[in-house]
Length: 124
Image (cartoon, rainbow, N blue to C red; front, side, top):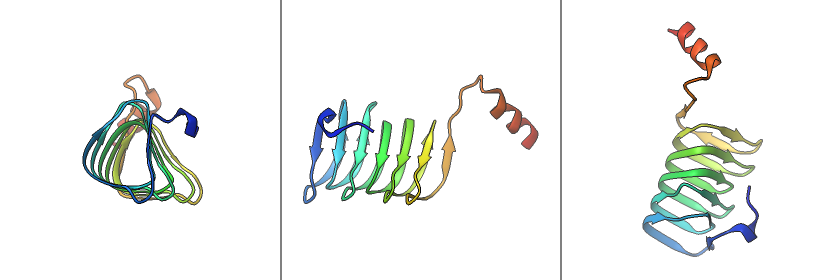
């Protein structure tokens, strides 16, 4: 996870945003956001952060709460205390002890990943 000094944007507890949000670099949310978030970079949902809607980002790190739908192109991290109530699609998923995930998960894989293809073939 990136350090606070690497942040390009931040909104704190008490800030409420409704609508669509696009950003570059790293954004940390400790307030409340309802709507769509889109980025190729990193979204950090802090301990007090609540996101309700659709998230599409390169890396998503959750210490607060996300409800809705998440597409993490590179990685989704659910940290201790993080709560995800969403259908997710990601290439890599990390759930730290104390993190909560409830929903459906679709893992993306590379076409050349023979172990995944072998398993899918055996499964039917």
